[in-house]
Amino acid sequence: MESPWINGDFVFNMSDNLMFEKGEKNYIDAVGVNEINTIGNLYFLDIYLERENSVEFHYHPNASELTYCIEGEVEIGFINPSENEWESFLLTPGDVISIPQGFWHYAVATKDNTHLLAAHDTDNLQTMFGSDILRLSPKQLMADTYCLDEQKLEEVLDPIDDTVIIGPPSDCERKSEEVSKEVRMERPRLMEQQGFEMLSASLENDSEKTGRSKEDEGEEKQSVSYGGTVVKEMNVCESCMKKFSR
Image (cartoon, rainbow, N blue to C red; front, top):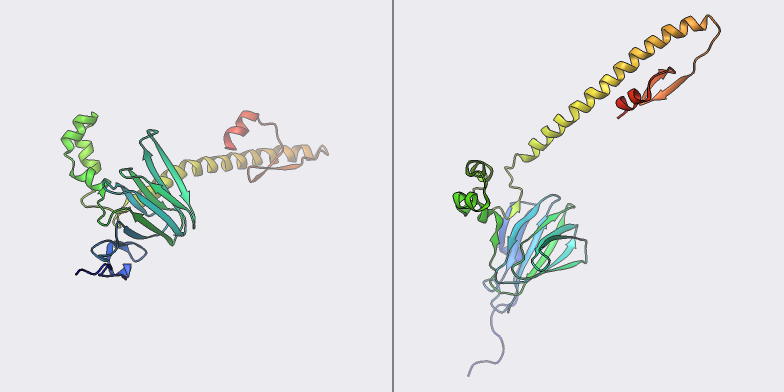
């Protein structure tokens, strides 16, 4: 006669089942029926993220999700099909969010050492990742369906050559490009500031010359502070001053 009691495995260390690793501080451990055969209708993901790292866009066709923030801070967002709009939520330690089955969602850490525990109501989780949708879908069909330039679409999606899971990928060069962009944006501001300083110096020299001639007449001029540069008080149009004080 079969025992009425449940037999099998009861204890498992999730760190023994690494699902995905981007680095020593960005990784996901998992446990399901293959790790504990007595788990019932559950599947856990133990997620560790550093700031600005994210679990990429994805959905679960066979499970709802409940994600609990243990440490750090995370923004979790999804498309709510009931409202047909994007919604996002900021979770801090102790917060939990419900993500219904099939919702297209993602999670990005907004602080270092973010730790999440995601529970799913299945013992064998299925996940469709956005990177797989983008890299495996025929580009010609995508271009035709959405009226896009196929060549440009190919160029944009070409770097996605594998499932991402935790993004951005380690070899992503976008951050350096963003730094270059910031430098390019900063240059005009520096040039404008330099131009203002040159104008201030020129006006100051002119003022000093005028001041010297008026000092002979016993007149005194008071210095004023403007835009971080000290100039002599003089009659300058307000629109000119506004232009160079931006």
